[in-house]
Image (tube, rainbow, N blue to C red; front, side, top):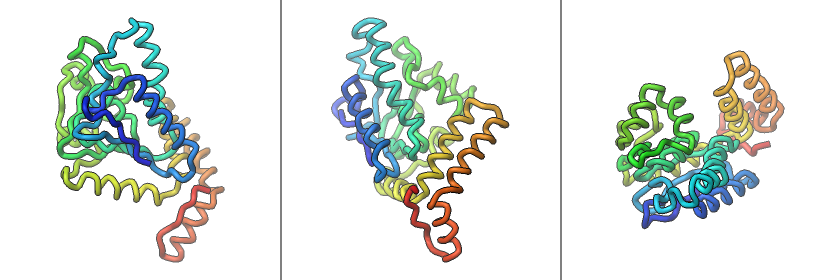
Length: 246
């Protein structure tokens, strides 16, 4: 499933309504067994230019925190926690909330025209959609302080160098490369993906001993699955496996 942020006239800036629509489709993806991979991208020239600045501060502090908790935060958590592979296909600028949407996905593929930035300090505010939690785990503490304190844009190549993205591809090949990646993941074992992601997320908040126990619990689910039997059978028959998520 490809979810396209679709407000190209303002570089896909997000308000409460657009976040609600994103949530609607994420919930559908959770319940649809036919959806094996979720790709998040943007329409037009940008990925997401952050929250719609025309709405910042609307309703005062209470209104702002309510929108964060009821819309943007849930979308970030769903991207991070949904037990299916998620890909941020970053076609252009991903800044503020847009950068955090990309960080919340499991994998990030970027066009050479993409850029990234936690620009909150430019507005006199701080990251409020997971950036302070996600960035240190992806690029490390020192780089996190630099990106958040300076609030400057970085190029796709710099994002690749510091480990913020997995791949940078030529812009003219971006859609084809994204499709190939999604297709490759969609042919993989859904149960193993789900259990691995569950263990990875749990391990972020646990010590090594508990992380090992999470791995055992997930592996027991995998070992009892038809996909495991298919994987072994395909290996013996020297053919690609046909995983069904059972």
